[in-house]
Image (cartoon, rainbow, N blue to C red; front, side, top):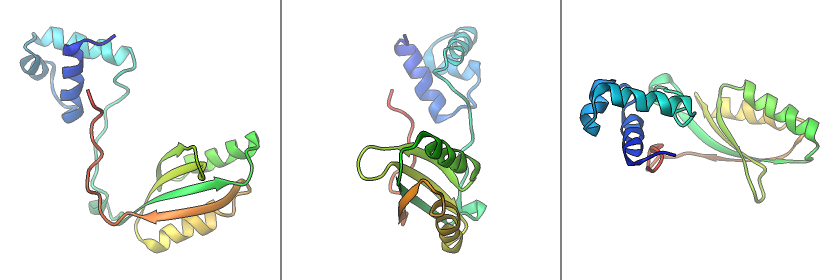
Length: 151
């Protein structure tokens, strides 16, 4: 279980994962050692899974972001595993979710241009034996950035 202090610590780390134990302690009115032990406990419990940097896709030349819904033609476990292996190998596909409803999967994709997205859809996704239909939506603008989890 996490208490209110743990929740505050997690909220602060979601804003800035570079905070030192000293800085966390100051924000939470704890000693640096107490703050450090709490962080270590949350890491050991798997509540804090990792630390990462958020990169600007445009500055990296990735000007197209798309959400692609994939409908599978079959739910044969081997074909589904094969498709999951395929999407795991593609760096353009930054995340994937299984869904309820018409689509079986939702893929978040970043590419350098529309031609690259088109190639990915027509030369990689659609030819896969498990895929029945693909529906893509190009992101025009992101009105809210990926936000921290609510604490």
